[in-house]
Length: 246
Ligand code: ADP
Ligand code: MG
Image (cartoon, rainbow, N blue to C red):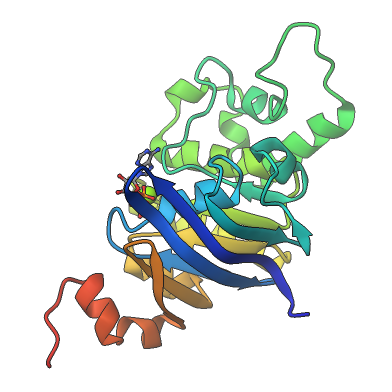
């Protein structure tokens, strides 16, 4: 068997007539940072949603750590160690940053819920690692978009995932904070975590990823390292909108 931490086989997702994911077979190697690029509407977010159990697939299979997770729901998949963030970060805005970390998979902080000391310690560790301890007591509605992205990442880390899927983690983030987010991702990758990352910003993709897959109209059109992929005519045509020579 290959050392794919995550693997999809002919994964398909349709919305009525629309084939949003058209038989995607993708193997993610353990420890790599894998970029997913492609034009708007090519099916990137749908792929994440289907892989992580937020959408039911219409065909194909998903394997994580060798286990068939195709039929699992999002919570079970997350507990199995496959984490993901959303294109739009959505913390509990009436809770503080720390409370957001503590509330992962407890439906917010319901009164009377006991939070273990292990969980508190883990939250503290994450606040320090992501350098957001100074805003730990700020309400999530009061922090910047970039800080919300870090919080989103922190919430995922509470579950100690071995693989994390990030949907445009630096969209709308100012350049200084963007650089910090990338540094944190590199550090988490060095700790051994695998990443699959959807990103529009090609400088992020080139600086962060080991391999890239290009989606167009729900299919993977090519795959390889950033340099190879971006010099591929099909990619320039589909993604960069450039005319290519006949
Ligand atoms: P990307 O993330 O690459 O921009 P998406 O995966 O969001 O693309 O969307 C792929 C296609 O599927 C688009 O045509 C989009 O309109 C459609 N789509 C995505 N989610 C839904 C949904 N929940 N219901 C209906 N159509 C959807
Ligand atoms: Mg998207």
